[in-house]
Image 1 (cartoon, helix red, strand yellow):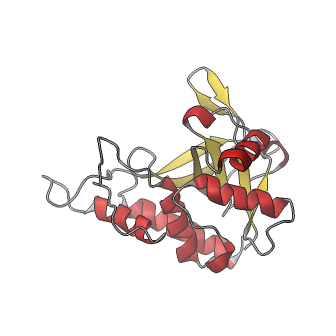
Image 2 (image 1 turned 135 degrees about the vertical axis):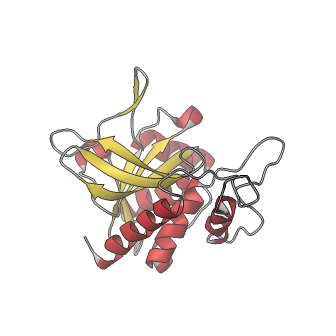
Length: 212
């Protein structure tokens, strides 16, 4: 671990604790019966960290609430002190692409390098990324190609706060409308196993290796 990754892990844990270990929900506030915190204003803080100032956890337009998981990642990494070494963004695919470019030697000074999950062991401070919705089946090369073509695909990333012999422990935002933890399974070589959704397995896009 480095000074940066240690601080990043502590910030993630502090946010998890602020959400009462995942018990809070994005729309809840002190004007709700029995709720002692304004969780929806925590979400506002995450949006403001990427200079979006008009959204909270209660913002809805036409029945749609904007996903804030990338804003959460950006908030934590900015607060840990990454400075100009990260692409703070409202969508994970943008900072993933920046890390892919860094891996290809085309983004000097960037703080993360995208690694193919089958060839890399996650460590504290890394970001584990996978596709969502129509991009759920995307692997590294497919995600890279589609971003080159469309400059977007739906995705998600969680920050690694601990690694054991069997799991990478992560914290992320907008998991179940909250900040929450995950235990992601590793194989005997410490590589990520495919994601499970019922009886189906899906690939990860990348592990973004922290170099700060």
